[in-house]
Amino acid sequence: MAVHIFVVNEANYDVCFHKGIVGLPEPKESRNEESIFDGLLSRMACIKENDYILMYITGSMILKGVWKADGYPFYDTERIWDDKVYPFRCKIKTTDFCFESALRLNDINDLLNSNKIWTWALRRPSGSNAMFAISDQEFEILINEYLKINPFSLNQWRILAPYPFHDSNIIEQIHMDGNTPKYEYSVMTYLNYGFSTGSFRSIFGNYTDHLCYVPTNLGKEMDILLMYGHPQNKNQILSYDIVEVKRDKFDEKALTQLIGYESWFLQKKVSGDMNMLRTTAIAKSFSPDVIDYVSKRKEFENKTVKLIRYSCDNDRNFKLECIFK
Image (tube, rainbow, N blue to C red; front, top):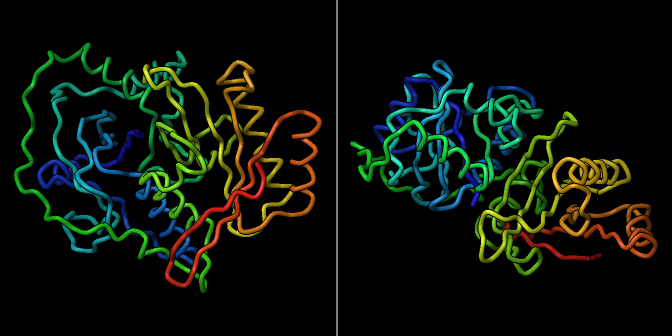
């Protein structure tokens, strides 16, 4: 499962802790407000029930936790934080990990510098730093660091004034242009929600971890990264699938970007083992040059790029169809 980090200030953390809820702020007014709105939706759509949730507090630069998602995320404009409305929300519940001492940013940076964790990044290429996710493997490393500085206890924190239940309504908030998701972020919301709820396992198999907007040292983020763990050893990742998404046509520029991610990942993460890595392109359509390239690549190099076409009907039902694998 993915583990989600919410970036909050001290005052807002107190509200989160007291009411058992986390949230992302409403988008600032701009000509791209709808796109930014769906961008925030797409991040929240990654959360599923019982995913772990931690909070990074900006002023004191510490990581506090550990909670679990209590149900699925939702959109709600009732004001509960003092500074602004945080309408993209998820309820949280306590866990057995009741740590009094928090992890400092310096501790986390030490883990980054030693390559023990790699998806943690407070500064994101996309500009959004209110929430991000790390892998389950990295979470286990953070838990070990917590345990080093905390006596283990089975005590639980108490959420004193739990926020009331709210139906999940993320999909209903997506901006549409007719029967097509209006922005790339809109498509990402559908995909992240589907990956989180297991809707696409018939196409992608039994992935064990799903991350979105994964940072690289190329100055860009991979749209989606699927991880496939060993069925008998959850700490061993057997393979990965890098997914690149476009709202409209997947062209040569997008393909170059995907192949660039593949090359970087092969070198940095899997020691050149091609058997550990797959690549997938998702779009409404594909240029003839892209289809020609992936066909020749499979024939001459025995390397595949899975091409998946998405569609959406008038009832907002989102579907994927594999056209090349």
